[in-house]
Length: 164
Image (cartoon, rainbow, N blue to C red; front, side, top):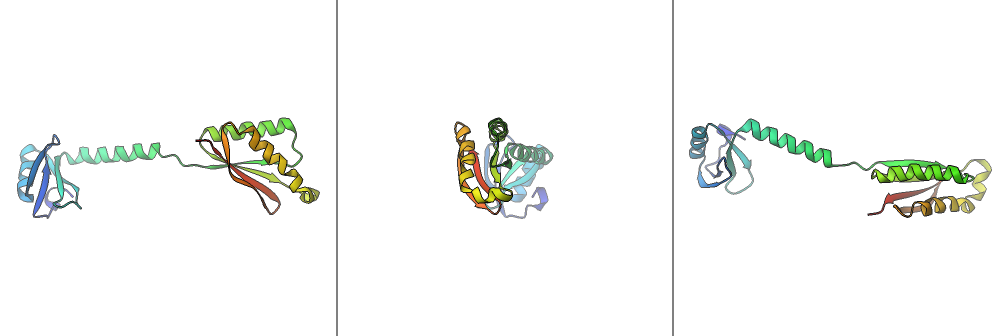
């Protein structure tokens, strides 16, 4: 709320330089803002009495938008990246997958490691669990197992997150 939109009887006024000017009527505060050639902006409407500040409203809106943009930039969404393996994966192929997972983890993402079974491989699910264990072992320097290997239909999954 700015200028004439402020309908409160009295407000706590803060000057353009951030100094406390005390509690006064809204009309008096409005007059002081006009004298300074600036706007009266209500910055804390829930306070008793509400806090108003004498500032340039356009500049104030710009600052708020800029702060919001900065906060949005700093906020990182954690994505879940998936690495798919097969039960009879070769050592070099496993190392390639480990390097991909390492890259994902270094960017702050979680990694879902999926061991997919096809056909006859379904009969040897538990004996293939070592592939996921080896994968986790190769990444133990930068990652920790968030969810242990668990069978879901035709696959076994495990989640890894970056060590804190």
